[in-house]
Length: 80
Image (cartoon, rainbow, N blue to C red):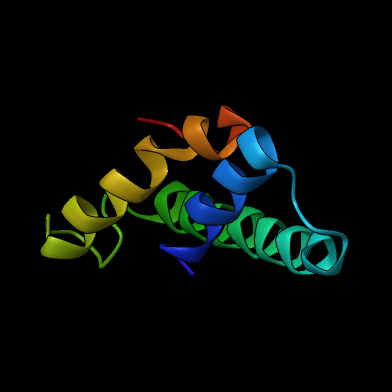
């Protein structure tokens, strides 16, 4: 998903998304919101994604959530 969504966003913005890909784009967009919601809930319950210690998951998902402004996902879910 992480490589497909930016590609679809680029196509939509600059080339025009083909009609047969619009449903796929919206489905991936919804999955992105869901993933951010799960991360937000998890971080509201504990200091890091995998518990009490900082892990590689926090580093990897920081890059994902930090790029949400490029994917036009509202930053209301991001707490960094």
